[in-house]
Amino acid sequence: MCRNCRNIILLFLLSGCATVPKPVVVQSAKPSGDVVSDQQPAQPSEDSERATSQVQPASLQISEDAEDNSASPPESAEQPESPAPATSDSQTTDLQSSPMSGDSNDDISSNADAETAQQLLNSNSSQQPQAVELNVVIDSVYRSYPLLEAALFNRNIAIGQQVGASGAFDLKVKGASENGPEGFYETYRQSIGVVQPTYWGGELFAGYRIGRGSFQPWYLERQTNDAGEFKAGVQVPLARNRNIDARRAELWKAGFERSLAEPDIQAQLIGYVQEASYAYWDWVAAGENHSIATRILNLAAERTSRIEAQVNAGLIDPPELTDNLRLVSIREAKVADTRRKLEQTAAKLSVYLRDSAGQPVLPSEDQLPGFPDPDNVADDRLETDIQQALASRPELRTLDLLRRQIQVDYSEAVNQLQPELNAVLWGSQDMGEPTSSKRDKSPFESEASLYLDVPVQRRKAQGKMTELQGKLAQLSAKRRITADKIRVDVQMAHAALKSAWEQVQSTQDALDRAEDLAIRERQNQEAGASDLLKVSLREQYAVESAEKHVEALRLYFESEADYRAAMALDEINR
Image (cartoon, rainbow, N blue to C red; front, side, top):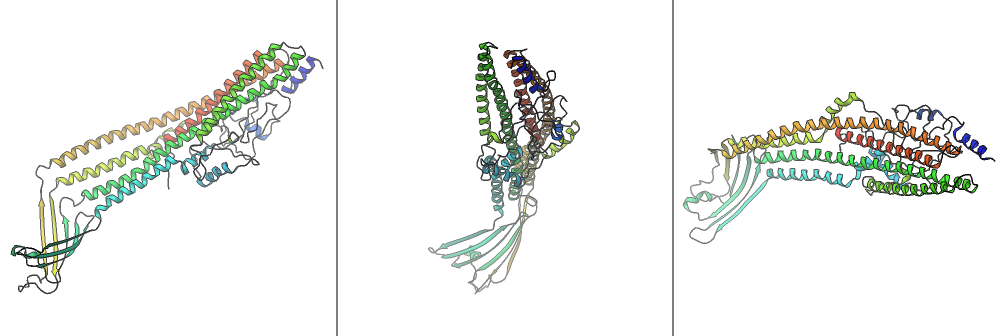
C-alpha cells in the first residue's frame, strides 16, 4: 500500500473524516486500575450526553489507535445532583461519576463507613477493589484516629478533677484516744464522731465520747457518765459562706472544666478532619498526575514501532526515531517520579485511614476514585454560614466557659468581703450511771452560739476582685476579636472556594483546547504535514494543562475542607 493511501486510512480511522478533529476523551482514574487507552470515543449514549455537562477530570487522554476502547462509568456510580456548567458541544467527556465525598454538609454514617473501611482490607484479587472516598477517611478519623482518642481522654481527666473537688463534701470520721495514766490526776478519754459538710455552707456533726478517771476541777466537763455521752449539732453560716464558699467554688469550677473538655475535643477533631482531607486530596491528585504521566508515556511508546518501520522503509530520517526514544526516556522518568509521589501520599493517608481494629490501611492505586465534580458556592449563603459558624465554633464556647469560671472566683472574692457569722446549735445526753452525786451530767444539755469574725481592711478580697475584673475585661475583648476572626475565616474560605471553582472552569477550558491541538498536530504528522518536534510540544502543552487542572481541582477540594473547618461542622456526640 502506498504511503498516502495508508495515511488517509489512518486519518479516517482517527478522526472520522479528514476535516473534523476527533473529540477528546478524558477518563478519570478508575478503582480497578485499568488503563484506558487513547481511543476513539464510544457512540454517545444517554449517560455520556449527560456527562458532557460535567467538568472533566484532569486525566489526559490523547488517542492514536483506531480501535474503540473507551470506558464507561461503572453502574454503581451516582451522578451528582448539581452538575457543573456544560463543556463545549464539540467534545465528548466519558468519566466515572461518584458522589460528592467532599460535601461538608453530609452527615457521616459511622456504621456504613466502618463496614466500607473494613472492606478495604478484605478485598482480594478476584474482586474489584472498592474506591476510597472521603467520607470513609473522615469516619476513620472519628472512629480510630489515635490522637483523637487521646483527646477524648480529656473527659476522663476533667471527670477526675470534678470528683476530686466533690471530695470536699465527703463524710469525715474523727476519733481520739487521750490517756494520762501517770500523775495526780489519772484520766482516760476516748471519742469518735462524724462531720458532714453541707452544700449550703455549714456542717452537721455527731459523736460519742467517754471520759473516766480523776479529772482536774477545771476540766470536769471532760468527764462523762459511765456509759458515755452522745452529742449532735449543726453549724449554719449566716453571712460569709452562705451562698458560696471555697468548697462550692472549686466544685463549680471543676464542672466548668469538665464542660471545657468538649470544645477542646471538637477543636482537635476539626483539625484532624482537615488534615485528613488534605492528605486524601493530595493522594487523589497524585493519582491523577500519575495517570497523566503514564498515558503520555504510552503515546510516545506506541509511536516508536511505527517510526522505526518508517525509518527502515526510508520514509523519514533516523534522528526522528532517536528523538522519540528520547521522549520515551524522559516520560519514563516522569512516571517514576509521579509513582513515588503517589506512594508517599498513600502512606500519609494511611495515618488517617484505618480499619475497624484501628490499624492503618495503605490504599492502592486501584482504589483511586478520581475527583468528583465541584459545585459553585452560592453567594447568598455567606451570611447564614457566618451565623452558623459563630454558633458552632469551639473557640467562643471555650471563652464563655472560662468567663463563667472567673465569675465563680469573683463571687468567692465578694464573699470574702462579708463578715463571718456562724450559728452553732448542739445537744448532748450522757448515758449510764452518774459519776457524781450531783448528777450534773445526767440531764439533757443544749447550746446555741454565734461566732463572729470580721476582716477590717479586707485587702485580700479587694485585690482579688480587682484582678478578676481585669481578667473578665480581657475575656470580653478576646471574645470580640475571636468572633471577628471567625467571620473573616468564613469569608476567606468562601472566597477561596469560589476562586478555586473559577480556576477549575478555566483550566478545564485550557485543557480541552490543548488536547484538541495535540490531536490535530498528531493527525497532521500522520498525514506528513508535521513533525515529531511539533507533536511533542503540543503533547507537552496538553500535559501541562492537565496538571494545572489537577492542581485546580486539588485546591478546590482543599478549600472545601477549609470551609468545613471554618463552619465547625465536625463534632463528636458520644
